[in-house]
Length: 292
Image 1: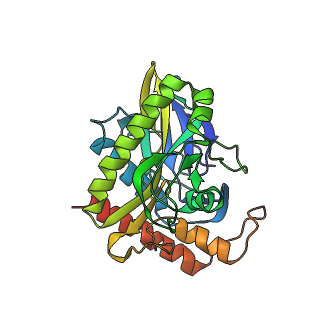
Image 2: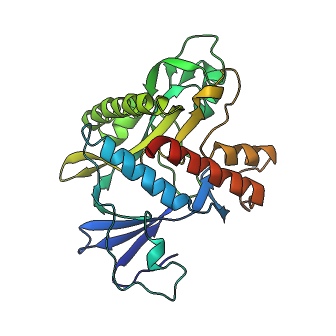
């Protein structure tokens, strides 16, 4: 846990630490180098991962602000009273900290899938559907879907697993009117970013959004189109029928599957080569997408 004097620590997420600012009117969010997989935080860290996530999110929040408002107030908040006796130091905050509007997060995760992968592929193999939506027969792993689909999920408590749910179930949780807006803007965001990324040689196979309500307005929160929230595939080597190489943490998931971890504590450490390769993949995603 990283403590900053003068700010009220609220919670530690899988990757981010959150502090209250201005009598709890705003939040200070600091991205760490922690990495999670299968709803568990791993004991290994990925060097500079938090900086990459923050830089990419800031890039996308700015680029999509014409589609929906987001929570960003300041991408370079100036912090005082930094406690030098803790692990983190002032110069390490660059690209890690953002000041955001406080909102009431929706109790669902908004997922858009443009390709058949991950839990969507597993669901299709078992039922021919994703979240109850029928798909054409004969699709193979990593196939492009006829149209992107909106597949919400629950938000699990720490250590539990998110569950794919139907749109009607999501509407029961968050309200139908809100969910209609979430679905529409999620699909719009995905199509916009997928077109942009394809021009940079990256396929966004699927992605996750989080939304909140701020003064009654639906806004985009958390992170956006990062290697933690999305599957990024290199377009030049993409071939349906296999699990494509990626610029995201699927590389870590694949390793954990390979060693047959049962997805229960104790959580295994990552070997040095997996850590370094993952760091390289995150950096390449940043360079391809956001650096001119």
